[in-house]
Image (cartoon, rainbow over all chains, first blue to last red; front, side, top):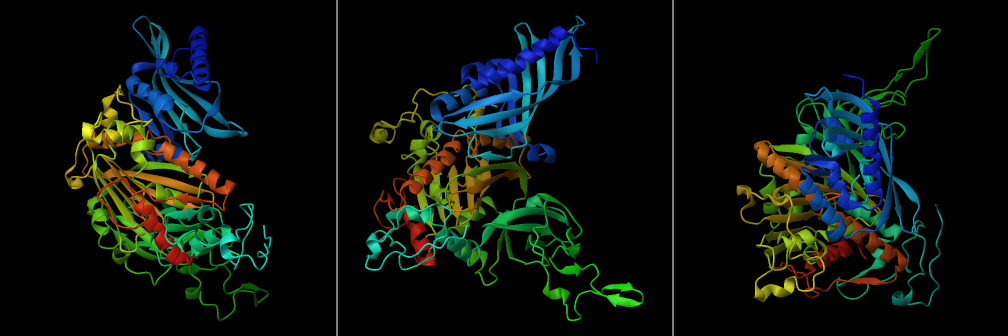
Length: 165
Length: 447
């Protein structure tokens, strides 16, 4: 693996922070835009991941399916309103792919995350903690997620999970 | 918490003797002061049925530990000898295990020595069970087979200590439950006098059970877990309530998956404790003029809603459905069997206290499913579970119901959609299944 240049690493950091802030600002419409059109988003309990069982809590297999989820969050799911707040650790770059021009074309990274939930009139609680397994591709419009698999330790969901992690 | 709550003063009639609001965690002896059931039937359900700790303890004893079969798991979860998986009945931890002969045993996860809940892994493979505290060892059938220093320790030519001469290991095994397996589903009961599983389900419900579990080998797809801050009965009621799905759940009303104009039937066992809600999907969208009222003014109905990715509802009918596109079966008290189009799951109710239960989903398919069918089941699973397009709001409304009950336990719910009687039905505009469940509950609970 070639050493990752700082500029690319800085773009990876920006992808993480922009994604987290979009999810924490109720800016749901922006969320699918972090993915490629054929991208996938999976949120999977750790027990299934470790046992090789395919079931996820959410398994959205395209950007279009993510838009359906956004519509669900905004328009069709009756739920208690809540705030959420992501804290994402520094990404670990496992592997990069190099394009014909000799530049980095894709990255495989991991990053720990913790999401806190705060309901109106309630305290802030740890809602979902886990690790992102990302396949990031370099496109003409910047870095995009080709796949984001969130493997979460918090297997016992505190009732329901509505917003994207 | 061990507070004695004195009975109300004499001279107050039962109807008006409701205690003022009490903290949820205060023990409440069953006494003459206990409030009376409101009305002659079960078209009113008192809020205190969901909040009283004394009733909850009686529910555990009479519904979960006596006289009923409770769901434990699927045989496909423990395919090989030595495979085990922890499960729960009521509040009791149990272990489902396949022994060397291939038989399925269910034993209580409490050591016969000092009472430790010794099995900590959620699942695994074992030759025997070992309690780490004093290394007592049990066979996979639960027989005690090893007690360290049972015959004492020799020191200076003398035998010191050890168990008394009359200690009989065969009297100190793990508590063994009665087990019934049918079509790959494992039920167990602490009550060895319980009727057969087939009699328990009864002839009206058994065919709906067998429709899913015909003996075709199952394939486990995975688990989902949620802790719902509400009384456990609310989840049984949710799946005995065909009135809500076409109203609360946009996806059901808009895409016709479950709607008042669908062809449907509601069936109960003779005791009205179990039920099957059977529905055949309509076309969705705007209903025919004659049935326009089923979506008129329904907030959740989105006439213009189109899926960006139609794979979410890529429904392929399966021969075993035999017509209906959805059958939701409630097996009282612990299980809901879900078949909603191509998504199939077991939903296991694990209560803890009056105001909380764990809801564990085991999604599965069949060994002979094509890869495309497996993918379809996984994609449709987005509708269900703690984040599901449809099911997430069920957990939410249960939480909000419980909050209402705890706010004024002396009040009652109203359950008279479709009348006040209890009978099978050919339509969904009725709460008869909930009335049936409470008629049974009152009989067993003597309330």
